Length: 589
Image 1 (cartoon, rainbow, N blue to C red):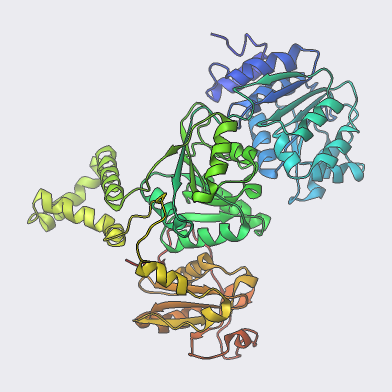
Image 2 (image 1 turned 90 degrees about the vertical axis):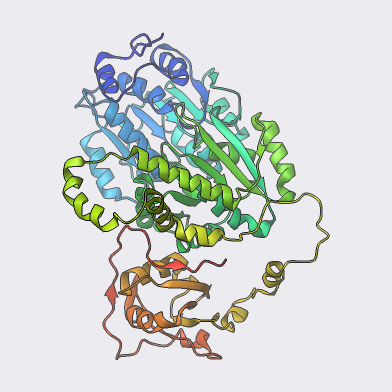
């Protein structure tokens, strides 16, 4: 079996990677490392994300650097700041026993002055996003005349993001005799053009087959009516109790709305899209990496460069137009030899696109029925039983409490005790799925009359003015707040504010109608007064909240623009806390 030493990796690097758990090189490392260390030609490597390519180029790049010269000698270009930071972190780990090596990530959204100061102190390896590097070049603070190795990581992603002119500009500042490596999951025409114009007799290495899906990924699709996609998504999540997934959506609006619905329905989820600030993005991604949230709803652009290990699922909330995009999505699971599942939730009009993706990636999608309520509940119960079996009990810590608990519950039989534990754990799930309908798509056109639910959907308000005229459901009170979609206020923000500002028991939230400048939502009549008291005067990113019980027929579009009353208490900020929301959307049976 080939070892890293056999590939020519230096002793100080071998020591660093062995402590990281590296044993035998992966296929992409076996092919790339010798070429970068000893070859006299450039290299194009076609490989999926998660195949070990950072070590494939990172180890030889470090080894080729002269640590006695404090000038940039290697340049690694990446599409996003997240990927820049991930590569920089990996290179720092590889070079643990080379303290003289200086690696600098440069990217937008961070202080350019601090990056300039680091460059002036001297660095040997620069990892950069194209936009920020161009800025530094134009300021004459980064010199690339001594660069002997250039790596374009996720080249197809950079080109999809419109960086082709920036890459051409950057490469024009680098000596012509440098060694160049291009990593790409697919090979679009723009990437081939860069290889032709800037690379010298490049060798092409293919790990797998061009444009194919990752080998360890199982491809599944569920075909449902378009209106039932969200219900199908929830059932898929419920049927996988340990899910850790990215849900891909086509638009920012869909991303935010689906994330808000998931949060309101009690799932640990959040959104990642281009309308978020960099600080908000960082917070969301940290929570996802730390598994505080288990489902990240994202656009393709926002998720580029997001490096997360051990994803169990990638869920396509509809198929992308470009097959290469699907390849990138599915390649985020089943990484480093592990297995993963790529799911597509589609309607009948997307079936042709599904077949086209199958043809190009060389994989067959399995059609599956949307999980039934009975199957979901059974899966959840067995998962709980498995967790109970595997839990590690600290006998010394727990024994002191056992006599009192045993005395309290001694009248219950073992069967009664288990029934109560299971009911306590799954009461919400059992109530939600009681008499729940089948939502799987039926290929032939149905001849039956429309169901009551379908007729209600057709009558549902479509415009803001129609939503404004809606009245609260039976037993509920309608509440007004002076924050809406134009303020960046969505259902998830409302749930969060209720959790942090309304004391007492959990607030059950019913229907939420988000308008541009204000919002209306339903709560139980018994909760209405304390909701108004709790939210009035709260702060939403500098926006002072006014809240009241909505009056039927009142023009709230005009009311939302008025100034906050002087009698309202001083705005108080809600400190964010990472915990499962107490407020939840009221489930409809």
